Image (cartoon, rainbow, N blue to C red; front, side, top):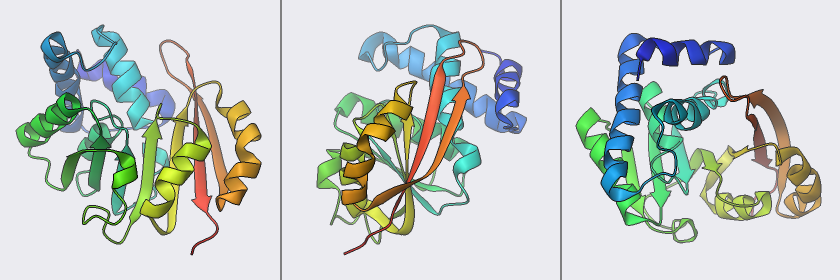
Length: 219
């Protein structure tokens, strides 16, 4: 992988990162593929695809962060978007949750190797997180990529959000139709859509929709 190329891919998204951060991100991509040969962490095995569909895709969230203190990544898989966001924002506290042990093992390996303090990879189900010390007083931001429907994500995120917190659902081209169909159910759950960012990945042109939901009702 080439750090300059990753930097070039981020330009259309308005994202600029320093050389050291880019190199750490590139190392993450290489390490994912190295582990993938024996641990089967991802179906994406081409380095260029890893760069675009894991690294760049995760970093599309950067313009939407608005300086949160604590971020929860639900169903994080190999650590996306949580790991790239942590590498790009070292002061961000990240809790990354996934039910597959080998994927959490990879995340912990990355965190140890890169010295990512304030990054916790938790092996378990998202449903079991509320009420635990990891959840604490709640998260400013909850992210989820390819985890489930918008109502499901809202149900999982609701007990984990701090007051004023946001859920950002990372969706593909189906996101607009899914949001339209789910509006009534989301309203019943106490969520309102406050943002719908449409973008395309820079190489394949794959459509991405970042749907921002805020909780309007609290117990």
